[in-house]
Length: 303
Figure 1 (cartoon, rainbow, N blue to C red):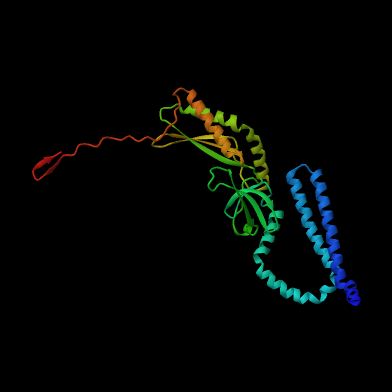
Figure 2: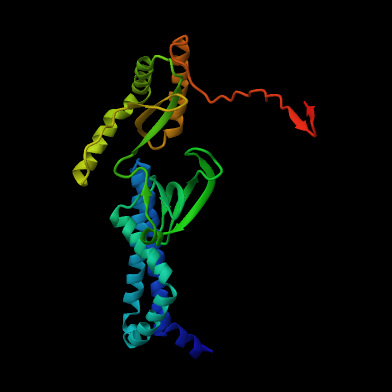
């Protein structure tokens, strides 16, 4: 019994396993200690999240290096076996490998980052976490109208960045162009209508203009884009039923719905103040009484 215990205690393989476990335990304690210090020192949540993620990935790499260093003398004879096994594993885990490659593309290619609003893999939502294999999104829309959360948390494989377009609503240009259409009755003061719409737009959206212009200039500097108008604009289209005004404006990507609510509320208030000079049009149906039919059957007149 004593010989067996001595063999176990002095077994070099067992010693290496124990040494590796101790080293990994020390590494885990150090990583958590550093993450706790960083959480207290960095006030910005986005920066804090990114630094914590970076430390976690570095710890994984260090763990692999520790294990490889401890067992380095045992790995030489297994090179061929590892090569054959690696080929089979690569084929079986090609989707996982593609997801890891997608994670690298997202991290270093600036596809998106946490907090961005994206459409990825047919899912639209805000990115709340980016892991090695999957991106976690708080979903928008579906059975909920407007850009509102529906409560579902969706995890999407990072490999989708190579398979489908990635729509980023808040990347280099965190604004969206939006439009509202206002039908106005013929006979209304169209010039006054245009003035009202532009004035309301400047009151409600004026704060976004300077920020949007600066963001667009940076975008033009970095990409092959033509300059465009960021200020609110009003255009008129005449159709068979009414004069249709379109108000186009740039707005914060997270405030589309509330901005529309503010615009429509102010427009209806101002139209009411015109006392009939400007009137909102609507589709109406006029039912006409059917005419009396006189039918002659077998020489007799039937009404």
